[in-house]
Image (cartoon, rainbow, N blue to C red):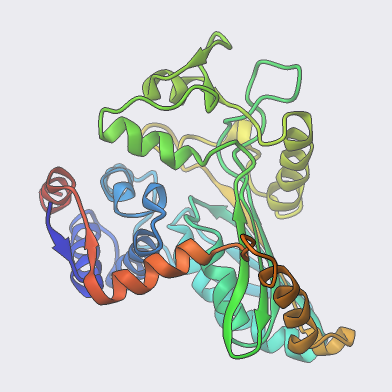
Length: 328
């Protein structure tokens, strides 16, 4: 399998998306996000997404040339229309505007509608920590999880991400989906023609399955059983109800080129610790108390190690996937 430097991987992805009709700016934004996820070992949100993104751009399910727009509805509330384009340019716009607003107001938020798959949700919030800010992000996705006791998917896998800056070191990043595993892992298994572990998903008849195709046609098992579906409801209301985006049950799939744009949503909330009396040193005290315990670690340690290795050595990508991307 070939090894690509991160810049080579970005060029490969951006060129493929441009051939599929994306503007140079949008193609570059998406490429940065997908390669960053690949470098962190989050392959379900990495280069495996390129073929489906390209197919959707060609079919018009994603407007590859869309320009997101932003307006301030209140001093600390930005309303962003992703215009049925890729989510990443809309997130870039939010990240360019939110730090200044949070520093001014103490807290700032951005609601994004008419959006799409936002990839590894921990990556955009991590960028906010570079400005010394704490942040939360909520995103809804197409239907994947049934309410507890139900059988029809009305929630997405609905990731939640959180970042807390620390002095002179990488921030604490929490990034989790509300299914037991991210749906991207099932897509990656399908592309590799591999089975999935039992306990990840149910088929369309509500039976456990190890077949990724049956899993994609069925529903995901929630993290924490009934508690997971309660959290999924919360995210659905924050990311879609609050922003005016499509609910999961009304959103078309991220995984194929069929149907209209999914029109999902994201919500970012950013906090300036100084406005609340907090400090990076106070955050660090809790982090140090965790790391002082043998065997304990902060979330993201493995991800950061993989990132450092990818910067030095590049990323290994399957020959078949590289060939598929080049053929776009």
